[in-house]
Every structure is written in structure tokens, then in C-alpha cells.
Length: 414
Ligand code: HEM
Image (cartoon, rainbow, N blue to C red):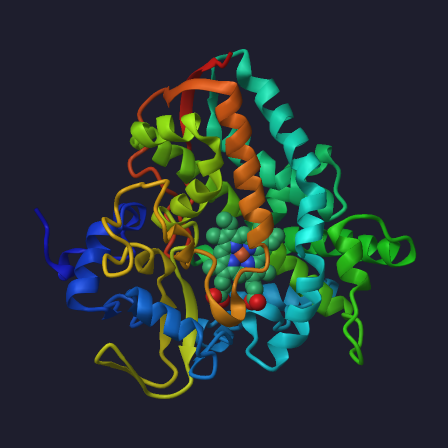
């Protein structure tokens, strides 16, 4: 059995899919680990991750230059958006205080608890309609038939698309995530830029029409959001914020829903407990996000030489804050690899980050998962895997943790 850090690579899809043994080694031996393949520093312990997230002065979110997004083939992307659309600028997640505060105040107005509560009936309705479509078959492919359309329909509607256009929305989301996922060729980058341009022009028309005639959707709230004494958001800012909402708020929830169900299938005693006491669903959602964090890590850039857990991270280094590893730290969570839906400190997980950039959409994400699982467990009994999962079960990614597919079988409840 492999027990040495050198035998693992975070670029290996098998390790990305099931990183727990690697994380345990890092916690014990190299809590700040320099990836030999990329030179990036991975911070893995709970307390260190939390401290890094709470120190935006030293660990900056402005990583564009370091990641090289404006160099090489990415220049083609930039040029196409400059000539025919709106080139990216730094907003929200890619900014540090005090600039970050302007965007964050506006976004917090849009993603408040009232808005999420008002969406609950719609989330319930969509959940039921998705289940209606497959329940008589006694089986479904959970990722494509449930985990993907639930957040997709909700967010697409909030962005002004109708349900029929959900496939368009998925195409946009894939295209804007693509440059951050894997290195792309010139041909591929041209293709994704073309799709992004199509999205930008659709959104620009929608911004204008919602400015004139606001509706009850998120896009109207964002276009018309104001903070005292501040200019409204410009077209470039709006375009960039939409980009972040789509890229940050979609694959993450798909992953949260799929990984959570897979956890219940692997821990049937916990599924039985949840069925017996649905009031535990809220804590189950947190516990599942802890154990299989949809965002395993994100980037920071060190603004000066800084020591973390005995390792000096040199100025200008890229740092990966590893939320997924922090959430499996045995010094914070007892028996961290166990799904325990009654875990008292499940909500202390860092799956939504912490501090300055704490996830804007966490209330919406948790509500989608809460409503989704409440209704799924009411309507489907005896859920089990309908076939072997692909090996490895997760899509390859250094940062995200999406499942490829999850075929299930069940009986109609009641
Ligand atoms: C289970 C689902 C989700 C997970 C696991 C997740 C995870 C995260 C994490 C880890 C961060 C922190 C980024 C950082 O430290 O730099 C974050 C920020 C953010 N998330 Fe989420 N997210 C989820 C759902 C959503 C949804 C539904 C939306 C919106 C529709 C959203 C929008 C954002 C935005 C805009 C930020 C940037 C906030 C800022 O920089 O101030 N997320 N999310």
C-alpha cells in the first residue's frame, strides 16, 4: 500500500477523485506542500486554511497575472471579447478589499435570505417535476436527470432564460469554466470565446430590458442594485459578475447534490437514519459538503514571503487553499471520513470558504440541496446503485469535484 507523499500527485485524476489518504499524509507530514509539478503551495490543515482565507492582504485573490490568463492562447480569448464583446475585468472573487467591498455589498443585497425563501416554492416545484419525469421507470441517471437540471433551471430562470433554454445555459457554463479547468488549444479557446460572446450579448440585452422593466428575478435585482454614494454597476462589471455567478453557482451545486447521494449510498445506516428523522436533512447537507467538498481548492497569490506551519511561502507564489483537505482534518472533525449526519460541528466546514470571500450563494445552494433531498427521500424508497461507477467516479480537475454519473434504482415510496 502506498504511504509516501511522493507517490501521490494532485494532478492524478484518481487522487483528485479520492484524495483522503493523500490529505491525511499532508496533515501529518507536510501541512504546506509544494506541488513538484506546478510549484504551487497547497495549504491543507483546517486552522491554516481558515487563517489564509482571513488574511487577504498577504493572500491575494488577484491571481490573474500569475495564472497567465492574459498570455499565450488566452490572448486570443481576450482579443475576441475586446473586439466583439466585453473583455474580462477584475470584480468580486478576483479582487481584494477595499475594492471587493463594493461588489460584495451589492451581491449581498441580491442573495439575501428573503430572496432565497421566496424561491422555495419554485425549487420544490422543479424538484417534483424532475422526479415525475423518471419515477415510473424505477431508475435514473442522477447527475444528468436531477443534479444538473435542478440548479440549472433555477439559476437560468433567475438570469432571464426560460426552461426550454436550459441546454443553452449548460453550454455557456461549460464554456466559461473551460479555460480555468485545463490547458486549451488555440482552436478550443476560439470556440469557447465564441460561446461566451453569444452569452454576453444575450445578457446585455437582458440587462437593458430589466433596467427598463424590472421583474422578480436576480438579474433585475443586480442591474438595479445600488449602494449609497456609489455608481451603479457598469456593463463590463455586470458581465463579469454574471460570469462568476454562472461559473461559481452551477457545477458546485451539481457536485453537491450528486456527491451527497453517493455518500448516502455508501453509508446506508445514515440514509435509514435520515429517512426516520427528516429534520436531520439540514445537518446532513452540511456534513455531505464537508466530506465531499464540491470545491476542493482555489487559488491565492502570496503578496510577500510568509511562513505557514513552518514552511516559508515566497512572495508571488501561487497558493491553493485546500477547503477539501481542511474539511477532513482529524484535529477538527472526529473520525473525519465517517458520514455522521448528527455531527455536532458539521456546519464548521469550510466548503463555502470563510472570511472575505465566503460564498455569496451558500443560502441558495443549501436550500436547493435541502429541498432536493427532502423530496427525493419522500418519494423514492430503497435507492441503490444501478451499476458500477466509472473509474474514477469524478471528473478530472485540480479544483472541483464533480461526479461523472450516478446511475440509481429505486421503488416508488408509499
Ligand atoms: C454547494 C455549492 C457551492 C459551493 C461548494 C461553493 C463554494 C464557494 C467557495 C469555496 C467560495 C470561496 C471563494 C474564495 O475563497 O475565494 C465561493 C465564493 C463564491 N460563490 Fe459559491 N459555492 C456554491 C454555490 C454557489 C452559488 C449557488 C452561487 C451563486 C449563484 C455562488 C456564487 C459565489 C460567488 C459569486 C463567490 C465569490 C464571493 C466573493 O468573492 O466575495 N456559489 N463559493
